[in-house]
Length: 274
Image (cartoon, rainbow, N blue to C red; front, side):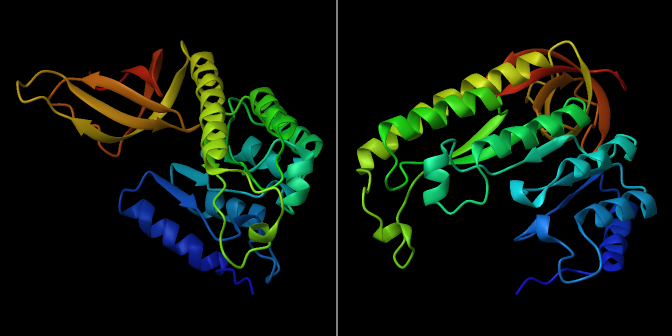
């Protein structure tokens, strides 16, 4: 049985967090997209209430099942004054319709592609991340090749890749066509390669732009030279930037110029306080 917290209670908690200096809150839940199904509201109504009745600088949504969303949901970003983070984590699990059916996932690749297209059309600078399970029972080489191609086409910024691991008592554990462990690992490595390529392309597309970064941690050299700060853009890109040793950026949001791609992050230049 799903149970949703009252809108007022959540708004009050976000107010307290904002008053304590928190710059960002993340809405999360076992089934976030189903929020309000046991009440007279929905996730969109909750987001609108938080944005209207609090002054929290940034609100982020955690994982959302694709079938819980429709294109109109993405209109929330148009009226959020930049406070609703342009990042969606949409767990796909497989990029092949045959595998999705065996997984009993309530989406197909065409539906997912249309949803992502609608989101990108409505939300400027949107970044999308996902989950993929590889080596699911019955996944043929052709099925896996379809998943790889679809992952490339979707241009995900990050993919959490999981080789299938059977669990006793689940339907999948009793399926035929169990994939040998070495093959699962090889497929995971191949999907990770695609994830790095698409992630690099997404990061590269933002080089030269300026984005708000919430700074989290700092590496301070013992010799007193410039500190290196690490933080996240509103659209969930990891950024690292050097700053004078005496400048404290922790829990601050600053405009930051994105200069170049370095591995899984971007090199940035803080544009205020220097």
